[in-house]
Image (cartoon, rainbow, N blue to C red; front, side):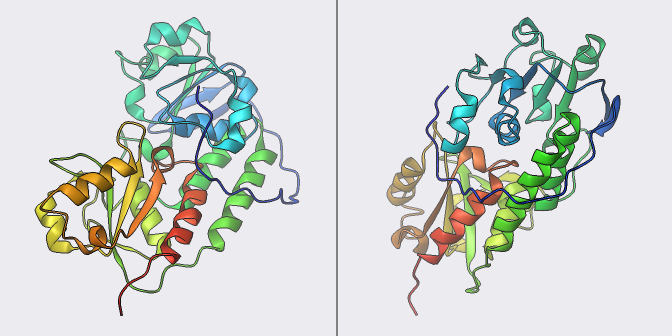
Length: 313
């Protein structure tokens, strides 16, 4: 596992009152599926970076017996806690591979992780004594509400309950709330495009999930905010017509921010965009672009990037 990563903000631990211990068995409704936790999970498989990084942020790395489908390197402050954790698969691990490490809990970043040709269907795993959990923002069986930071904090709180780690969860929530409250939305009334991936057909951030939530916190008007999805396919012609003031570039291992800059500059359609000509870009690493524990520090980092952008009077 790679352990280099992007800048992450860390605040001092806050003094908080001790929280009550979890009472087991704990029964939860998760994406319309009833999950019963008999005791704090001891052998956990995490699928997707968002799941892995939340557990590491709660100090639960020693409970993780395997990871799959990690989207990028861990941020520096989590690298030590993630050192030595087995990588089950670079992509989605099969049920056979997952069950070989004898998990009692599987935490998936996407609901689609739990398929017959993936880690296994949730009812099947439950019958085998393996509890499962899907990050609520990634539910598809029940369409989640438009994502908010409070929903992310609720997931942290729920994970604290599952692992009887309430104190760590509330401390993390308090740290993130403090970081979030210090972010001042940009007052300039700027429009923005969230460019996730794609070349001929750009895949962009729409009106739900992290792109909308983060851009709103930054004071940016998303040119695709009227699309009630997390992400959507767009056209370069429509983007040129909108001529956004700022372009958010998702920096992925397989499609870096630098590659996106080159494409935008060399594409005759997009090369004349004001944001491209003036290099008005904000960068976010891919693991921070999906709903998870990195959203708040990434928003704070992007707010600092945004302050450094200049515009002609």
